[in-house]
Image 1 (cartoon, helix red, strand yellow):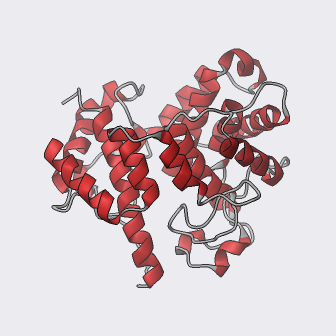
Image 2 (cartoon, helix red, strand yellow):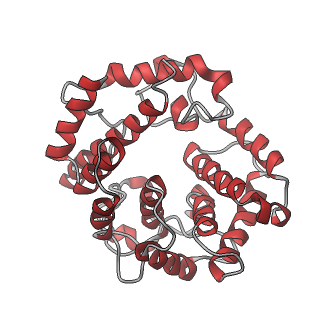
Length: 309
């Protein structure tokens, strides 16, 4: 495995965005968090939100909740302090862009259409129904995690979580991206359960049970289908040995890890399984950036299970 990682390390240093190179060093080497924050700040706007293609499939330079969510995942990955100025500026942006009536942040904003983007990011009237609480559920949890109780940020996070949980408990199937947002929301709620459990419309154990049932239908259990499309793999749902579904699906999860190692290319990265369908230079750039993101993401998963195989 060390040889595989060495190849990926060389590719990351040569071709990935500086942000992913800094994340790689922080996660797998001895790189400082401060370097990650420095490169992450390049994607932040004066309003506190993020843009500039931090999510490579849409290149909108202005702030959007989805791009800000992408930045929040990096901050969560590094367990950055809630006192970090970058994070506090993000909170201000999220408070301004929250829709109190729906409990959501708009997943796609109209301005996306004016810049290179994947077709699924196109904005049109009513498009929010395709996205629902992706990423709103996770953003609600993010606000709860990084704010003090009884502040506007805390109350907004709790209000968003209530709306999200009500939606979750009303559905019988869910897209895996939205499911991942709910899983991260539940992690946040569990951390603060002493203060939030009485505020939720359902018990957290009941919510977790329903979420797991939905999750089992999100990923492909047929290895012959893996890599042939954009569907979820087992480790997109079961991301560590501590996951409550791991015991049930352990052989399949470990097969997924073997699949990752088997499909790693000679240069140390994985091909992505989607494209924009337009053959543009903009997609070629996004594809290269995604390869770096994918490499960091998959090696995090492989490391999480390294004691299991």
